[in-house]
Length: 456
Image 1 (tube, helix red, strand yellow):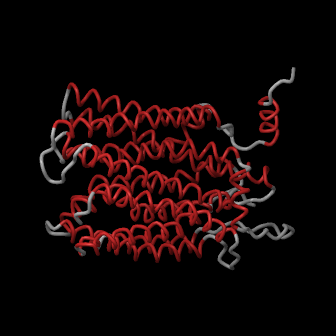
Image 2 (cartoon, helix red, strand yellow):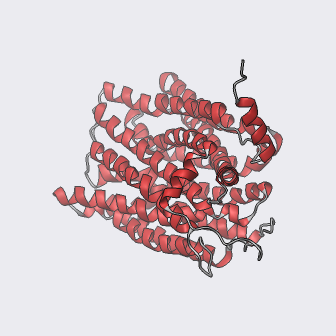
Image 3 (cartoon, helix red, strand yellow):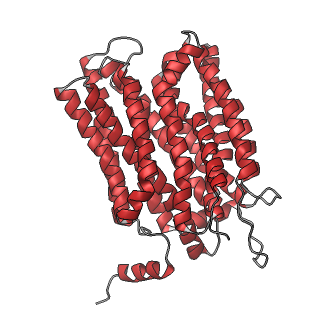
């Protein structure tokens, strides 16, 4: 395998992430708000379907990983599914933001079906997209350079969506939010499809050596072995899941927090604008930070910035309510950490692929990277479930002034809970993850020997 990745490949892969994340950012940032305040669904129901859909994903995401790893075509095993998944997901995206056109029982049935279908079709595209990374280069430094491009463009998509999303919805809907969300979905779908065809044209996995053995076929039963024997994958799951639940909990809850707890919805785009710029900076600076600091400290740094963000919001809420500077500082802190974490977790997954091949004797990029897709979706669903149920518990009522007890609950859900989850993520990483400098067979075997209890 050639280790050098061309600039054209990096740029095309990055632009693919731009289209892909333009398609998913509105789901994680605005879908809860769209369902509750535009379509008129109850918050508890929305949170429940978010979580129920992820139970389905627990089966379908690894299945898609198996399908991709078993694919043999002249276009490779990744690109065909990226194109197919994008076409399907683009159609479902438009359908999802048509939910407000329904009423009564049909509204609830349609919303549940559309959201579940969105998750299934997103899986078809997202798993092969990220699974390509180990197949593009076997060199860790090249992977680190490559992963900056999709993460940078993805952060840009989230920045634009969070900062200008509601404004664009208002413009395209001419004041009608339902029409605005639908028109935005149509525009995004076109850009999404264009980005997929760009990847299909310019991003190609490296051909296996001529004397290489034919790849083994995978079965769904193999997934249990692949995950079960890979202790570092399980450690990574615990680390990333708690981090991303906290991150997406903040992202999904921010619009309610600023609109109702602080009483100023205009602060939401300020927060998202500064946060988005900081996330881009975190991704961009990741290779330089990784080159200067020991790798084992990077994830703890990524967790520390969001905890700092929660402290800043707490101080702002108690001493300086509505202070734009502190709100911007809080947004910058959390998303700078998220930028580092997003870049780092993709590199860590590529390392886990190498480690898994050592443990099981089989290379399974797509099965292992299916875990990333499942984690992001499950984290978003868990965040949405917590927001939905939490809003109901604290007595939230859409489009009215909230009680003092409700506002207190909103503060805790925006500040206290994310900080706790970030601390849990740092603890799991410190306690269980070992591939800080990539996979090295000798180092892993030495660590395993040292970890064994000494016999009396």
